[in-house]
Image (cartoon, rainbow, N blue to C red):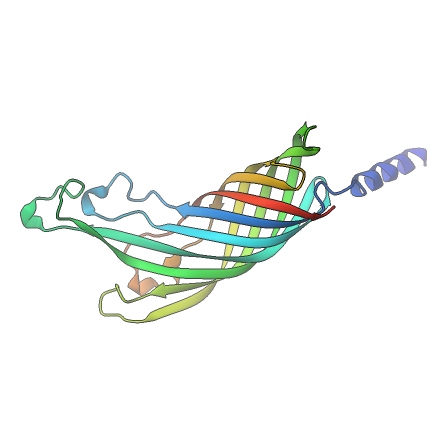
Length: 219
């Protein structure tokens, strides 16, 4: 009986730990890319890329667990470098070559993101801890693809798709209210799913890097 009470008290203590930050506003900027064509530039095809920004509200249940909800938006593109074959096939050094966006568009999505935090040190001057974290982000994304540069097509088209991201990063305090984070992640964003028959090149962007800032609005 005593052992059971001790375990229950321990669990209650863990759950009732004061939240690490409390209520926060989060601002994140991320870049996602692929390296399909990094070492194959002789064909002029560039790697696809997506740039995004998110605004969210985060509540930290305790010092180890938080959850964020918010809105994310951004754009993507993929270009091809064209050149006159009569002037040679050296795409990189051909002064008469130029790049053209063959695929481009925008996306937006609401999201929810559970987070797991692990404190690794404490900044006494700023009275805040430093953390490593893992974030799982789920969003329902509308992807809008511009068709004006696609052969025999005009206008735009869109499609909703579920997107998953996982981020592993480091968060450190700037002062008593502001903190900064940086991360490396993986995501399932792939704009070819909007209109597969119109997409010629591989264009998923699984590799993600990003930075973020958060501000404590209430502890």
